[in-house]
Image 1 (cartoon, rainbow, N blue to C red):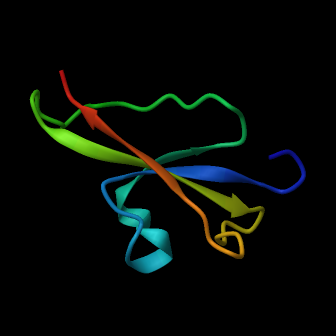
Image 2 (tube, rainbow, N blue to C red):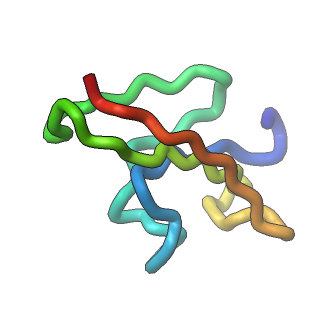
Length: 73
C-alpha cells in the first residue's frame, strides 16, 4: 500500500481500543509478515485478521478487514 499506509495483523479480534491493539501481532508495509505462535497451544484455532490502515494508523474509510482461521499444529 505504498504511499497510502500499511496493515496490522491481529489475533482473534479487531474490537476494542484502537481496533483491538491489544491483540496485534504486528504490522507490515510489505506483502510479507513474520509472526510467532509463541504462547499459543497446539490444537487451538485462532483467527488471523488483516486490517489496512492509513499512515497515521487509523482504519481506512470505509473500514475493511479480512480474516482467516488457523489451527496451531
